[in-house]
Amino acid sequence: MEISGIVMAIIVGIVIGVLGRLVVPGRQRIGVLLTILVGIVAALIGTAIAAGFGVADTKGIDWIELIIQIALAAVGVAALDRVKGRG
Image (cartoon, rainbow, N blue to C red; front, side, top):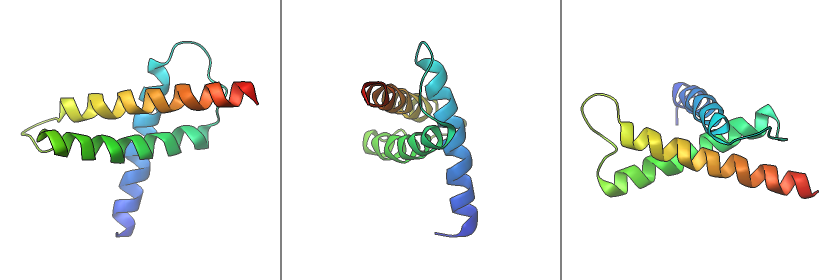
């Protein structure tokens, strides 16, 4: 993977993580770095799931892929918040 690919993954991870965090109601007790990591993982897994369904590469904006990624990020943020809240 090239440096530009890593930078793009971080940027997409930030956006997906923040959008996922906005979807989860209430205040989350996880930090910015965890939000970015959740976003990166959600973006990668969401792309793989969208590719599996054949909707990852469409003309224009890939809305279904984006929705999958944001949903995965929201689940990840909520799960980490619950774990962090217990500890």
